Every structure is written in C-alpha cells, then in structure tokens.
Image 1: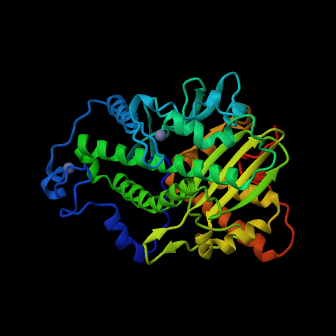
Image 2: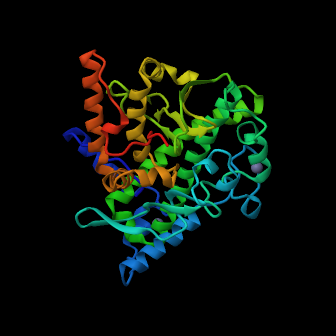
Image 3: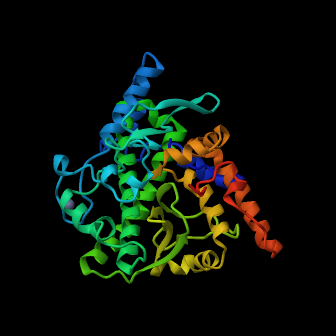
Length: 402
Ligand SMILES: [Zn+2]
Ligand SMILES: [Zn+2]
C-alpha cells in the first residue's frame, strides 16, 4: 500500500528478497506479542471476512487507529486530546493557498480504502488521492499545540517574511518534512502491527511482510535524524544542515514534504547512500511549497551526510531549473505520503495525467516509470548538449503555471 517500491530483481537479490518477504519461525512475531512467530500468529486461524467491503471497512478502522496523537518534541509527554489537529490546513499559511472552495486534493485516511488489484490475483487496500475539505483535513497529528506554535512560528506566523529564507527557517522546513515522514512511518508501523495481530493471515502475505520490513528499516534510518534535529533545536544550532534553495518564479499549486534516499541523481546515476558501519540509509529532505508570488524547492541534507551526497548536491546546483523540476516531478507521486494538491491544478490535468499520478501513488511497479526517467536523464547527461526538457514531457506536470 502507498507506493512501496519493489525494484526489478537480479538473481542474487532474490535470495535475500525471499527472507525479506517471509517471516521466519524463530523471529519475534510482527504482531508485537513478544513471542516467537512459530508460537504465535504462524498457526493462528485466519480471520474471516464475509465480503470485500467488510475487509475494507476493517482495514480503514485500523488505519484510523494507527494515527496516534503524540508530540514529537523531545521530552514532551502531551498525548491524546491535547494534540491539536497539528496542521489544520485552513490555518496553515502555505496550505491555505492551495485550497479552492475549501477543498484540496490529498489521500484521505479517515475514509475506508478501496480495493485495487495491481497485480492480478493480489488485491490490496489503497487510498486514492481525492477531494478533501480543509476544515477536516490534517496532514499529521504529531505536535502538541504549545510546540506547534512555538517551534514553527518563524515559518508559519504571518509577521515572519518568507521572501528570503534565513538559516533557521530553512532548518524548520526540513524539520517539518522530517517530522511528517517520521510520523508517517510510526503510524505505518502501528497499522502493520494492528493488522498482523487482528488478521493473522496477513503475516503470510509477501507484499505486506515486505512493506513491514521497509517501514522498520526506514524508522531505524530516521531515528538518526531525530537525534540530529532534537539536538539542533535544543542548542539553537542550525549549522549542521546544508540546503539548496531553488526559487520558482510563480506560485506552484501543490505542497510536498518528502524524506527520501534518492535512487538516482539528476544525471541518472545511481546514488550510493548506505552507511555500512551503521547499516543505515542516508536521507535527503525535499520541501516544495508556494509563498507570495513565488515558490521554493528546498533540498536539505545533514552536512555530515555530504560525503554521500556532495555530488548529488553539486549536480542539482549546476542544473537548469527546468531539469530539476523534471526530476522532482517524477519523485513526488512515488513518495506521495505528504502531498497536497490544489484542485485547480488537478482539474488542469487530463484524465490520463490524473490516472498517471494515481498510478504512480498506487503501484509499486511504477518503478518502471522511474527507470524510464533515469535513462532519459543519463541520455541528457551523455549528450552534453542543452536539451529542452520540461516536466510537460511526463503525462503529469506538477509545475504547471496557475
Ligand atoms: Zn503474533
Ligand atoms: Zn509538545
């Protein structure tokens, strides 16, 4: 669900892949009981659903339950009701720009999912991008009111200008992107645990198990960044972050927050960002949003991670804006968890383009689409000649002018 990416496997990877998509009898049961799998869910009777709707409704209920309310600020113990709908869209300076007649387009996890058969015979629950009213929509419930007000004042309160961004503001955007992603992964982990413990047969579904392992790994990877951000906030020290600030000369009609370990760079080259010593993957934070009369794409990484990403940053810095847009345009729907689109942009897209976005959000095999883009980027790089490239070359273009 939600766009996990299974890459095309080579023979040698298939062995480790097999481990990845099944649970061994002696590992801890993923339902979180503390018992070994062979003594727990492995032999439990399957939960029966009478029809698809019942199963979907049940899945939707677990999804709602998984969106816990807590505050990510280190040391804060606020829970439950004191957690505001942290980013009620109507009050949010950036996101209120995207609303049209009080609506935006996003994934709505408060509803039941729909069934989607991406691979024949493997129906999966899925949340389409859909119209959501901004009075009820939230992106994440991961800060208490006090910390949400205090931490993000300099990027959210109107008296602070965003026409030029200072170091602290750039830091805060990256921190916000990190927080959304971290929260998303915590919720995904809780959802997996709830599904495993209530529907034991899901422990035997390779896609679910694969996704469960990915979430665990990503949470572990992101924990490292949690420590960095917590310390930086505590010490008021924003020097540890390197950010490229790209300006687009008009107001884009979407906002997107993604923490990713990019599979390839803007020249189509594979990015190696795995730290063998700590067994952690390194991440970059992308934040794209409109302000008054212009927009930003912020690309941030920890300075200490530049040993993995210096070339990556250099190529972005040296590329024309059109090419950067083309590159980011394909990443957005593939890493779509914190994406908000203006209905005005959505309506400008053809049905084919809308379908393309939904497909990329839904389908793990849209890695094929990504592979196509990768090849195209490396062709451009090899030709050494200026090629006119635009996000228009893909079916959907997030960077259409309003
Ligand atoms: Zn179990
Ligand atoms: Zn708090």
